[in-house]
Amino acid sequence: MKKANKKQKGNKFAKKVVIPAALALSVTFTGFAPLSTYAAIQEETNQIIWNAPAGLSKEEVVKAYLQSQVAAPKSFGASSSNEQFKVIDEMTDKSTGTYHLKTVEQVKGIPVYGTGQSVALDDEFNVISSFGEVSQKLAGANITTKASLSEDEAITITKSEVETEIGEVNDYDGIESELTILPLDGKYYLTYLVKASTSQPSPGYFHYFIDANSGEVVHRFNAMHEADTEVVNARGLDLFGKMQTFKATKNLETNKTHLHSVETIKGNAVNIHTYDARRMPETSFILLSALLGFTGFEVETNSSFFYDPAAISAQSNSLKINNYYQNVHSRNSLDGNGMKIISTVHIGDKWNNAGWNGKQMLYGDGDGAYFSSLAGALDVAGHEKTHGVITNTANLTYSGESGAINESIADILGVLAENHFKPADQKNWDIGEDVYTPNIPGDGGLRSLEDPKTRSLSPAYGLKDNRYPDHYDDRYIGELDNGGVHINSSINNKAAYLISQGGEHYGVEVNGIGEAKLGKILYRALTVYLVASSGFAETRDAMVQAARDLHPDINSQPSAETQAVMAAYEAVGVTEGE
Image (cartoon, rainbow, N blue to C red; front, side, top):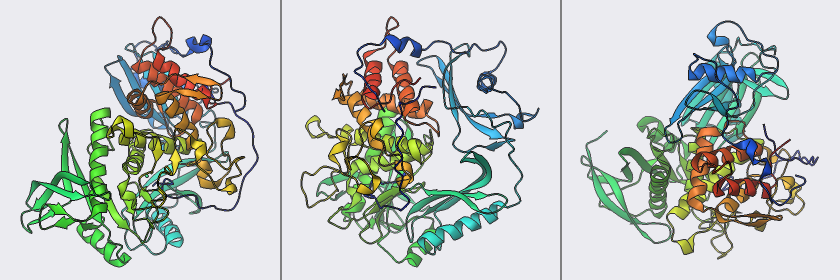
């Protein structure tokens, strides 16, 4: 597998640092040279890399191929439940005549966290591409698969840990748990992965790995990712004083109209609903949530005019993001299956943040100095809702390089979604510029995809210029910010900008191919090739493969689109490895 050029660094920091929060918004080289020739490109064409044995199904071919990649093959046993690889998804691409299967590694039927492979087959089931590392020592490892702790006990431990961190939680938005094997520091732990979503007293999407025998916390992180009615035409002024018109739902029993739209695009009906937390005391807010099944108070009016600008902006932005994914990427809501899109405004008291908690969007009102109401930013809405798309596709692990790619994809698709609705002369490559430092006009957003180094970072990160990095050689490799998920995202952001807009960067010239083609290539890489553990090098490979799928080689030479992807990653120091 190709790898990025790496330069060793030793600066690590033990203490915590609070980074600018909003796009913390979730809720998570040496040597480079001008790309003058493409002599090595022949290695990356869609040629057969493994011939399928006769008589095998697609699933059997994929398992056999992946098993062949284990250096010292060893099975866990004879039964199918003891196989190392489990196929969890399959897609047929009629446009290319190929099949794409995704797998997860397992031990006796228990999934191994952070593992996964994506294998593409041609029409004769031969393997033509493969993404995702294969564990070499999994079958031979001494891994216990019997739990003495119950699932309920693990959930109780998680609740105690969460409440120690944020205070008493009277009700949770949702709790999910799964028996999972966690690879960590060279060891394998049998754990319950418990995911807990909260709104009050603090929003979060907490992931706890509870040892299934000792009950200890092995690892944790916060991924902050019917009455009779009729549809009526409604309107309201958003946070910028612009009149927005949309469909809303009128309750014929109460005669009130709610900020609830059912948007149908290409035959796909998606419920889009915005609620109001009203900065209420925790008990009242959670009680209504628990008893009535919603995550806030209804935003309602006695007429067809709504008077809450934050709610209007949140609803309008949700409608636009759904429109973008439906019309541009043919994706039916965030999960691809029509899930309800929920937003809640007025969270907390002057909260300078927004987030995706695994279930819904949460918007703070801002303090009026560092941020205005975050519900006003379309790219923030696109960023956070894209975390929902990522969770339902590659499910990139929220730490280190895969976490940086997670944040970067949310940034890129957030910007592309916003620009999709803007005239050409108003498009930009900043994140959060509409709500960031409202009293300082023209200072840009929190992050810049066009020029990451125009934005400052805390000196605590120890980067040489205290700026966001725009080259892999300058990446942050410490432990803060989950291993730099919001810091190193800027490297992949810069590559995306170059792919779209072109330009010269560190001596490498890139001929841009435009936003539309960038979006299609990135979306295909995310949904077809990337897996949970994918870092910079594998993202580069996935982008190259996706470009080739959409824009095939001509006479064994890469298309202009594929060349743009290769050059852009060359420019940021993520190159074909040894």
